[in-house]
Image 1 (cartoon, one colour):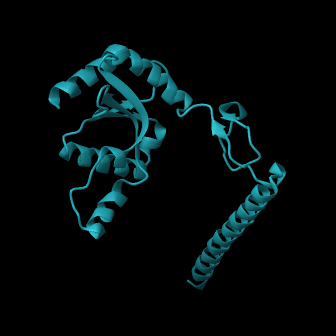
Image 2 (cartoon, rainbow, N blue to C red; image 1 turned 135 degrees about the horizontal axis):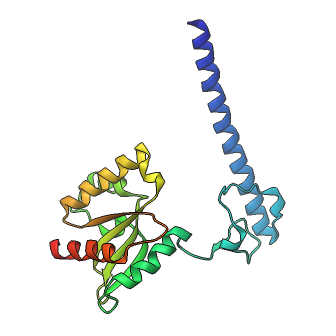
Image 3 (spheres, rainbow, N blue to C red; image 1 turned 90 degrees about the vertical axis):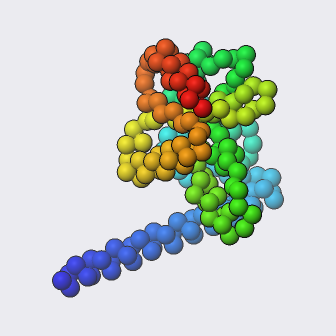
Length: 199
């Protein structure tokens, strides 16, 4: 029992140390960055590359800064689906908006600040992969979630269930489409058509 207690204490101490170390590294990086901005010079070698999926061809490096500009708002899988989606929607009447924050699709009815923030926090930092809007008014008509393997994780399942229940209650359709190498255009068109007729 004592051994388990020592292991637990050691683990907590280790996690606290890691958290402290991370904060110190962040402060150090921010100091380097702010000093670099003041001096108009930044030494990139002092910044650790933390993006595990970083691909140099995906970003544009034009400034003396630790930040880069992405070449596309969409991942390769999202871009592949976007090209299919363009052939499916009614381009005369509809427009596809990628990476739309859910909070931009919603509006809270309550005027009480404490309640309002409670509801906003439930959807804050969440976004739809694609929202199809009316071309003239940009009124959201439906949302499309492109489901990759991350949607099989428990936390992501809970997130999807919450989002689906919320927007079902609002009578706003959210379509889930699994990521695929090749898509059946007719199936996607049918799903969108069914959604439009049931709105």
